Length: 298
Image 1 (cartoon, rainbow, N blue to C red):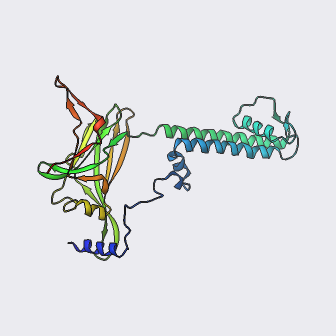
Image 2: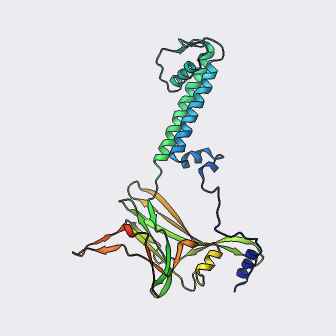
Image 3: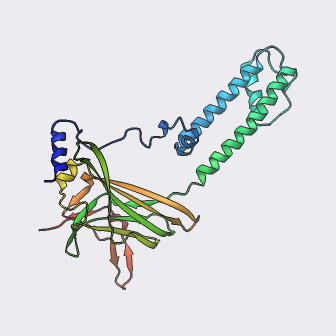
């Protein structure tokens, strides 16, 4: 056994390294980006984006309504001290509607209207830009098999998983990368997460239209050489998949990623074949069995 592996096991037994899957609770969560509001507004779900937009719009109009209520008779044809009239006058001003029934009639009110008109102009420009940026974000609708399997391919044990393009178009010049992420302890006793690239038999394709089965041969040079189902679980191993290419429809770069935990890697299993032939010799793909795997009989 390698020295770092023995050190790792000693640290694990002493409780210095926690059990289970390594997790970052705040990573990728939209509400953790308050220090970067632009990124927050681009990554927040649409429901949250619209909710924040409505709340901001209501609060902004309420603040200007309170400003209009300072003093008396700032708004013509509005009830004296009416927050409702001041609020809806603010809505008309912010949106540059100007029905004409209510209008500012004091110098103070005209100054507030000027400020609000400027705020409204800038606000609508910002919201329009954010909405366009959200709609124009190019995403890859790539489906990854639920499990990765370890079975023999060309007489070598190999790690295999498959992907599918869920759109009817093609991803041009698609590239796939696979990495092994696992716990290690250095010879000096320092704990770290190490990343090792996994060589794929085919890591790129000129056009990704239907399915793509990725195969990593576990040979002597593979980071998975000598590993077992139990050892990968102990090392909290993860297989990180990254796929990128150019969407032919919008001619923009698209990215997709997936993560296989140690429990998602099934040993001595194989993926169910989803390519079939009809009676007249034509081939078709049956996506209903895309995630299915079967054990290999000894």
